[in-house]
Length: 594
Image (cartoon, rainbow, N blue to C red):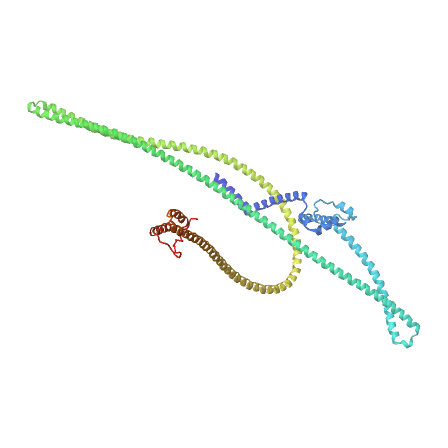
């Protein structure tokens, strides 16, 4: 039953993993946990995106900064863009819930239709204002244009009058001059207006460029956000893989535990078999002992019967002898002897019958012993089987209870996970819609960026060619540097070896100088002692020879001291005088006692 339940559990786990339901359940649980943690953190802390982005912080400093953020958040909330709303609220640090009516009252927006966001009404009002401004500008432009048209026939008249100057009077010339001056003034005004319009266009172009840059930055931010989302998804996938691995490990551990239980059961069975074998061996020993006893008894009975037969044969022999003796004397006793012989034969037959009965009884005893052994074995087997069945029944009941509890827990978990899955699916559908819209914008941006990338690739190729040349130079420089470092290392090694040799030579020189100084000192001491000894010899004082021995022992080795003493004694006996140039040899290798 344990194996069947384990197999059922394994099949359930495999089917859930194959369908992908376990992964979805785990992902939904993690998402709910992360959402709870994020909500808890959002209520307590300032968003790091808001603290890092200084431009977003500058929005709050504006008079209408708060209203701008609230309008955007109301737009996202109106169209149920929950994912972008969560990102926007975290970046803008606007976590509080907003009220549509309160915003409309503050900004004095007339809400004509509740099925449209507040931004729509703001744009409508802005467009109305633009139309009014355009109508006013067209009126002013029309007046200027009419004035120009009025002046254009005057130009033609002036040209005609210039051709026919001799026909025109002085008054007309003055009038034309005035008109020319007015025309020049109008041209100057038009030039100024055109310059202003050009400046406005330049400003607008600069604003457009700045807006394009801002859009690019926003696109980059969106791309970064998409990359972050992808990284988050990859992390979730990795976590799912880890969870799957952990489940597999747990399943392996469960299988190992089951195998261990099976091994324990097999060991117990082997132990039971060993015990049965030991019991059988003990029974066999008991049978052998009984057989030995029976064989001994049978042998003893045979011996007794043989002894009886031997005694009977001896009696028969004795009777034969007696008969032989009696036959000679008495013939009447022959009949009695025949009768006795017949009796003996009858007794022998009885003995043979007894032996056969004993053999039959022995065979019956053996059969009975075998039957008893078989019955005992059957009893033991039945008892063991009953005990094992009782234990298995108890285990099965315990396992059944545990399995029922586990099944109930799994049912509850499945219900909870199904609920979480439904909520997770809804959230994911909303996120997918937002991502699709972003993806469309991203494709449009990519098409524009690809054109720029083509130009950048050309520049990149040129830079690569330059970099290759630089790399070649770097490689050559690095090769020369390596050679230089190798030579430098060899030279440094040689210098170190020379320094070591110089140190050794200096130490040897110092050691030799110290030895030379010691030897010179010893020579001076010895020469002084020799001079002193010469003076003593001349005075004839032999008593001071012993003092000289001690001094020589202190200054030189004992061997040289003895040699000098012998020489001095000889000189004392002969009363010879030594010259000053006489040399004394010392063993300088032996150390002198200071």
